[in-house]
Amino acid sequence: MDIAHTIIALLQQRAPASSICPSDVARALAESETAWRVLMQPVRDAAADLARAGTIIVTQGDTQSDPDTIDAGPIRLRRGPGFPGS
Image 1 (tube, rainbow, N blue to C red):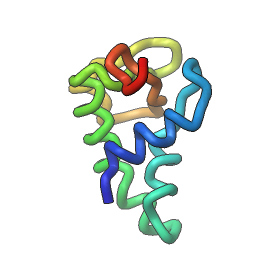
Image 2 (image 1 turned 60 degrees about the vertical axis):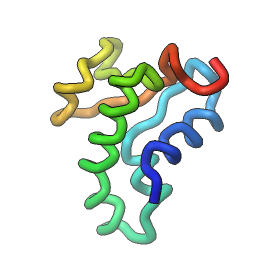
Image 3 (image 1 turned 90 degrees about the vertical axis):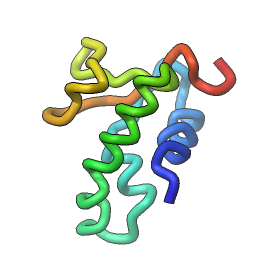
Image 4 (image 1 turned 180 degrees about the horizontal axis):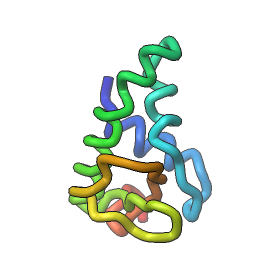
């Protein structure tokens, strides 16, 4: 299971200005309701790593979030300046 790859793949399937929810990633990787919920923190951790690298941007509402502070609350994942193919 490659969470970072799944984040990138799901964003590539969307319009460049669109975003995804971390739960979209967890659900794509899990086989059951219980399993995807367990994956939420690992997905957030992988998103933070990708955001630090500039591959994606993490937002809360309309505000870009610091990747080191995305441990609580609803977030969205968007393509960043270093997104593949950008």
